[in-house]
Amino acid sequence: MENNDIALSDKEFSNVKSRLLEVAGISLSNAKRTLVISRLSKVMRKLSINSFSNYLEFLDSPRATKTDKQDFVNALTTNLTRFYREDHHFDHLISHIGKIIAQKPRTNAAGKPRLRIWSAGCSTGQEPYTIAMCLINKYPELKRWDFKILASDIDTDVVNKAAMGIYPESELAGLSPERARIFERKGDGTIHIPKEMRQTITFKPLNLFDPWPIKGPFDAIFCRNVAIYFDKPVQDKLFAQLGEVLAPDGYMYIGHSENVGRNSTQFSLVGKTIYSSLKSVEKSQVA
Ligand SMILES: C[S@@+](CC[C@H](N)C(=O)[O-])C[C@H]1O[C@@H](n2cnc3c(N)ncnc32)[C@H](O)[C@@H]1O
Image (cartoon, rainbow, N blue to C red; front, top):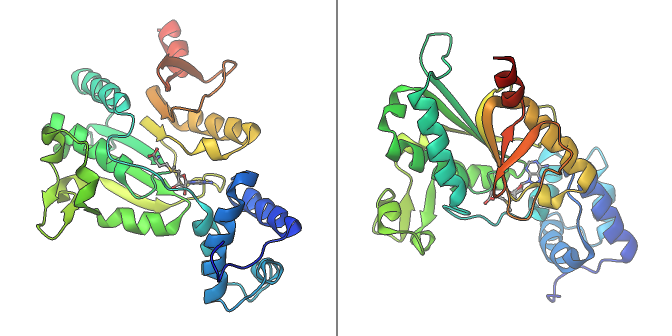
């Protein structure tokens, strides 16, 4: 504990956990106790609140603003991410989109070929930018398509950061020269995402357990290292909802330690943490 950290009783810790489960679906393990103390102590000090009980009471009172409630969630999310994380997913995506381009793509109301990808739980943006960089680099014709990536996260701080598309140069560590070349180096220790990649992405704050202002269908959904923070029934509910908005010939990519479960009626495991929609099987059986 740091000197100015605020003491947290067992009861208060249990109340913090209940609140986070209720508002974000996130199950905090007991191992996160120190993290809760240090992160929420900072928030509480800014509010001049000196006990967790008073803070939790404040959050439930009419005095707490939307921002105060959001700050509680932002402080407790885990946002670890990186460019090209689990890069076999991007190899698979490139080949999937290549097939869509070669076959007859879906079109929008104006008859333009349409492609939609969702990065659900995008954190600071490295995941949706990797998707954009891989695809536009490989298939420049996508610049003329109705091609959009939705990138959403419950944490408004990371969504704001992601939308800027600016990162420290150290993020290039471990990337091949071919991948690193796509970033714009500014010579001031930062790298920027090129505008043509940035403008394919819409960043939105979204709690996955609130109603979705999204119909799909998505040709691909990335929901990686997000469900890991949820209990199994919450995970099942989320995957079932994602299955509804995934296109019949679409794929869902999840985190390396996550799984949809063998009994899913919506997904079939087709690669390492890669699922195809079972709607495609129904469709091809009918055809
Ligand atoms: C570890 S990051 C994963 C980032 C990226 N998908 C990746 O794999 O590199 C998990 C993200 O899930 C977000 N998250 C957690 N609960 C959420 C919820 N209920 N709705 C939306 N996003 C959530 C967190 O804010 C965090 O940014």
